[in-house]
Structures are given as C-alpha cells and as structure tokens.
Length: 305
Image (cartoon, rainbow, N blue to C red):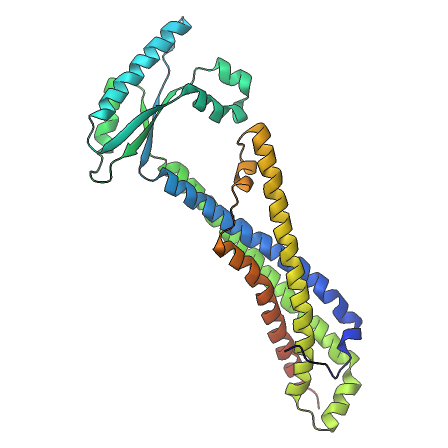
C-alpha cells in the first residue's frame, strides 16, 4: 500500500502540518471515547454492585445525653434488624458500622463536622433471588418499628447516574463527529493545495496517458501514510494522558479518600473494548483520510479540461 510516489508530495509544505493536526484530532477523539466508555462502565459497575440490594436508613435518636442517644438508636436498629430477619424476600441484613458511615461522609463534610453531627444508622440489605420483596409493606412496617426509617433502593441515584453517563457518551460522540469533520476538511485542503502545486506534473502525466485513478493513488498513499503517523501519535498521547490521570487520581484518593472526580478517574479500568476503541481510532483516521484524499483528487481532476 505504501509504494513509491511519482509526484514529489513529501516536499509539499501544505502536507507537513497534516500529521500534527491529525495527531491532535485523534488525541481529542480518543479522550472523548475514553470519557464516554468510562462513564458507561462506571455506572454499569455500580448497577451490578447495587443489584439485589437495599439500604435502610434509621434516623438517630436525639436525647440530652450522648449515652442515652446511642442506647435509643441501638434499640431502634435492633428492632429494624429483627423485622428484616423475618421478612420474606430478604436474604441477609447487616448493620453498617458507624465508622464506615463516617468515612463515607468525611471527604465531603470534613472530620470535625462528621464527629459532631448525629449520623443515621445504616443497614445493608441483600434481597433473595427466589422470592420477591413487597417493598411498600416493608416500608410501612419499618415506619411502625422505628418511625422515620427510610428504605432506599438506589433507583433514583442510578437513574441520575445513567442520565449523566448518557450525556457524557452523547457529548463524546459529538466530539468525535466534529473531529472527523475537521480531519476531512484538513485532508481536502492539503490535497487541493497539492494539486495546485503539482498541476504541471499532473498535466504531463495526463499527456503520457496516466488515468485519474493513477494520480489519485499517489495522493491517497501519501495522505494515508501521514494520517497513520498522526493517528498513532495521537493515540499514544491519549493513552499516556489517561494513565497519568489515573495514577494522579489514585494517589490523590489514597491521601484524601474517595472524593468525586478523583474517584471516577481512579476507577478507569481499560478492558478489551476500551483498548479496541483506542486502537481503532488511528485505523479509522487512516481510512477516512485515504478515502477523502482519493475522492477529492478524483472530483478535482474531473473538473479539469
């Protein structure tokens, strides 16, 4: 495919910018693809983790004495646990230690505020697969056993997260589409400039009987080579960027604890699909650039007298 060129296209100033420009475009497209895939994978992972589970939240009892408050809250928690153990459709119910609940809130509220605030008691519930759970009935009985107790099936959180992931994926597709359009325009500009620079040579080739497809092949080979170089460079830079972001976020999370964006970036785990997407980008850039160059040359030569 990468045979010699009878036209001196490698010396054209108009084509020297093409690898660098395509590298930048592929880099942006790769980051957009990684962002969309990461958001989808993050939500899918949480969906799998939370499938078949509920969280029971028991509000704390506020009394004048701390010991009395803890005793009353423990009493309410025990009443809820006894109820859950005899509820059909529940396989297991375990209280979440207060230290774990505080650790979840500490990155957001700070250690001082977490220590002073009365935190609700949480119970992790695992549902039985063999028997459905009557959630409305359970909610009523929980209210009777410990007033103010709520049942969270994570549906609202997952719906919001899925909507956000879809938005990120759509944004990534839009970015990739815009990048593709920019790449096509850049190739068309470079090819037409090259046609103008080599107009005399092309006329000579026509005079000796060279068909348009022979001339188009010269341009498409040259453009494809430049696109492959730029695409590979862009993909490598994107991979380095993602690895660097993940390393930095993992280091930050280890020091400060889980906190939003850093946790999301640290959770990036490239699977086969992600690697294939990144590897496919330079291949796609090469194919698109090659076909664009051929089409542009054929259309331009067809207009010549």
